[in-house]
Length: 174
Image 1: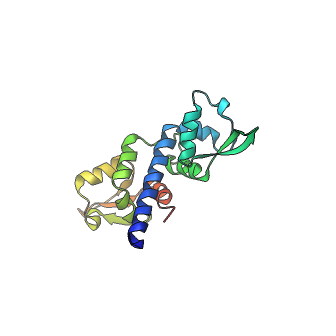
Image 2: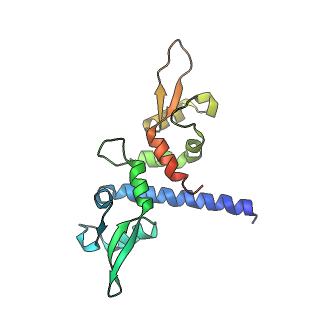
């Protein structure tokens, strides 16, 4: 396997890991939002078992920060987990949640989302060969926004703040 092939494979694995982190954080977003910035113990987590905690640990979302007699007792969120919480937060609204639809759309079109211009720039669908159904899917997921047009000119689109946060997080290893 060439160096180039290994780099491509590593980038794909990293992207898959990050999407797994998104799904796990999204599944436990309320609890993780409450724990953000603090140290916590497993016994204080209502209806959250040790196996779920170790699932989050294996995904790199929590880490042990203290032990007693060889047993981990203190935990904290990792920087990656905090980054995911920030990336999926919905503007200033206190509802940090992405629907399964949004997660699926991001996963399916991750490469395209990385190619779109910065949020301050606009683009036309033809620039990226986007058809009407793809535009509708990206818009419904809150990943792009339609800019106001006049005089019958083609629609112009811009990347949403949500996409910028997601893109920053997904591309963090590149």
